[in-house]
Amino acid sequence: MSSADVVVHIVDDEEPVRNSLAFLLGSAGFAVRTHSSAAAFLDVAPSVRNGCLVTDLRMPDIDGVELLRRLKAAGTMLPAIVVTGHGDVQMAVEAMKTGAMDFIEKPFSDEVLIDSINRAVAVAASRGDAAAAAARTHERLASLSDRELQVLKRVVQGQANKAIAYELGLSPRTVEVYRAGLMGKMQAKNLAELVRTVIDIDLDQFGGSGPDPS
Image (cartoon, rainbow, N blue to C red; front, top):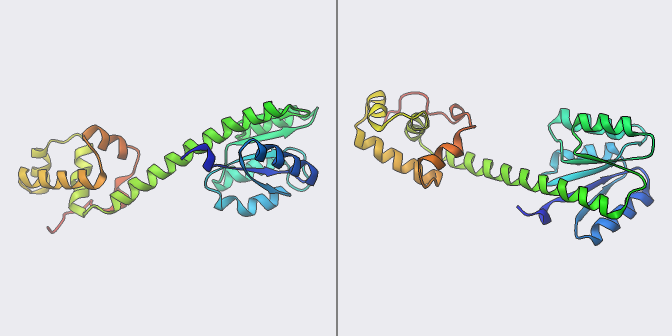
């Protein structure tokens, strides 16, 4: 995913501020969506996949810190920048502790804001890449048969074909066939790539733990 695929979400209760920021960022080449309140953004946050957030700190009802807290609690946290007025540094620090990447004090230059957003967009893009890669891996794992999953689990544990064959009651040649098949389905060029792909995934969720009738 490229940075161009990331949408910058602006949350501010003042319409002139929203419009000004949207114009500035749009002119700088960013895709932008504006939201008139934290509550309005929270309504759409679960559907945001590739985005970063620019939010004012001082807003009625739900302020910027509370917005970040709710996003974090809901598991929908985005790379976030908070915009703060003079004297709100303590709140801004609290926002950083809650998960904000950066805070910018008013008045700020266009360059300072754009530089900060570029960093947030880059993080959002890398997260999107990681999420897409994880989704592809899960799809490939779901395509494996129970027997292939049984072999895969033992391969990533470092077991040799002979040991796997003995444990599963197969011939070493049959294990080789299953191993070649799962490597193809996982689109792994070698063992190291296979292990890197699945090392952080709970393979038990895909089955393959019990004996296979085949």
